[in-house]
Length: 280
Ligand code: C2E
Ligand code: MG
Ligand code: MG
Ligand code: MG
Image (cartoon, rainbow, N blue to C red; front, side, top):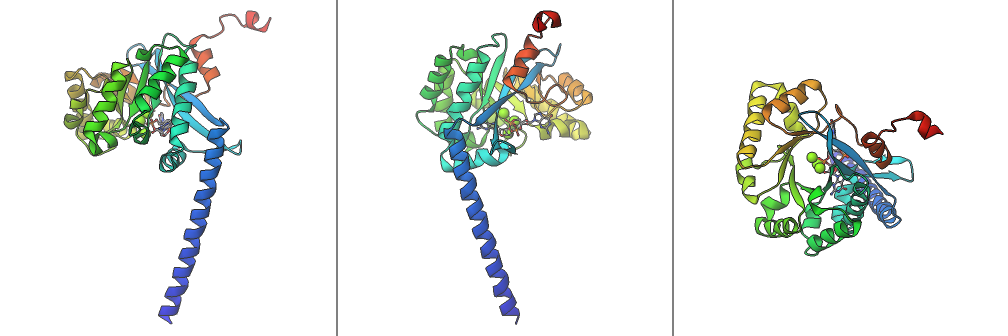
């Protein structure tokens, strides 16, 4: 009897797995179609100077409104794009859109996330530099954000790709630091241009004395290697003040601004000075 019940459960489980697989396949097809049709949107989150709080850059973030309405989070569709190779189309698409938008904002920088899967592609550096050149913006205004994973997995290869990009004038930032397991001591030798502190570390920094000490030590060590630090996920005035005190020169988070459309960024950077003039 127990055996019977067990088999029944197993069958039910298998059915669920099939459903999951079907759903995944469906989402895969929908994502591929959306990317091919150029239906992936790009929004921009302002990054501000810790001192003075003026906007010094934006981070481009991909958005997918499946079927035009339902928003699928990047934490879901980016891994799917990586697993299926769709990232080879999606990645360049986001880079091109971001660079073209940034052409209208000459006074600020633009950051774009790059997947380890893209970094692994031998054509990536030339392709990325080509896109930036075609968009007509200075490569030095572009920061590519990459997480530590590939640098731990394949340090030699990752360093080569990074050096090729840097030779082209592009900046490279280490993204999500503090969310993984590696030490800043290990990562410093790669020569990143900037460190981005993960939201979890931003939060830990104000939760306990130990968290605060860890944050301070991380920023100090980065600074001693001439690596400026951006803090992500800043949601409160207290966090902003503490991060500034620790030595972060740039801050990013909902406290300052949410990701927004290209148009909204344009208005933020050049607000209409005269409503009458705009209306008339
Ligand atoms: P990320 O690169 O670390 O980007 C920052 C994420 O934190 C964004 O989430 C942003 O909306 C969110 N965020 C910013 N400020 C706050 C805050 O104060 N509080 C909270 N709770 N969240 C905040 P998003 O847009 O959902 O993207 C998630 C991740 O997906 C990104 O993390 C990045 O790893 C990846 N991603 C997004 N767009 C792209 C892309 O075009 N290419 C690649 N390869 N990855 C992307
Ligand atoms: Mg990022
Ligand atoms: Mg991040
Ligand atoms: Mg991330």
